Length: 274
Image (cartoon, rainbow, N blue to C red; front, side, top):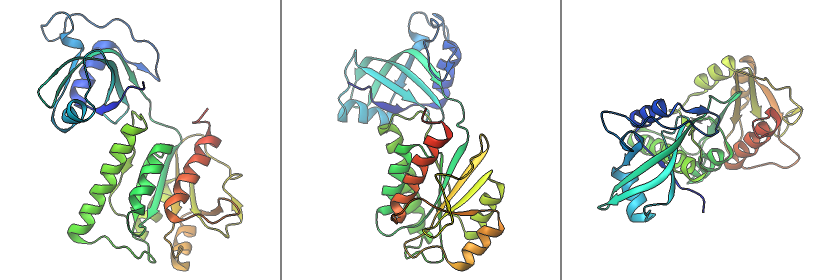
């Protein structure tokens, strides 16, 4: 059975990683320091999971002593171990046996996602997270039917971030994607200007994304337009920021799936899926 992943206190994971001498990119860690914080035995190797994550582990997943588990801070550190003790409805003690730290991904893939209708935004975030996108930027494009304003906008952004967090755990990622705040067209142009490669997906793009020259480092920014497409004014602004219009393939994808397809293509071509 695959070990489930839970979010744990970053400070505690950092301390355990320091004591273990965490390895970058995996591998077997050296024996842990038997003396931590003045305690002997497993005291320095134990991470306590409480609150919502602990409740999910104990009451929903029904984790029991001896079962494998992975704890992460969502920022690249993962502690691998077994359940040592369970108490109450939300307390899990994990004996850590090894720690892994993932380096920052290169090149970094940012997907600018125009706001889709209904719950398709959460679908896009979920699948892009599972695929491996590093940053998701919600974009208020001119032709978006959906608009994020006031309290509704804050709730929608919170849903996107919650979706990324849960999908990150489900897909066993140690480094969850960042979901940025709502971006304007000017904000997106700034991202494109700073990127090593800026791409606007367009069905009539002259260049296939499958053959575009990709950077080995730095950042790639992919812009996914709304159901009504990127407006001529937006296309002009993005071209002025250095972006190239690229097509994915012969078929036209929905805005909620295009970013996932582009991410998968780029991850394969950059070698990050090797």
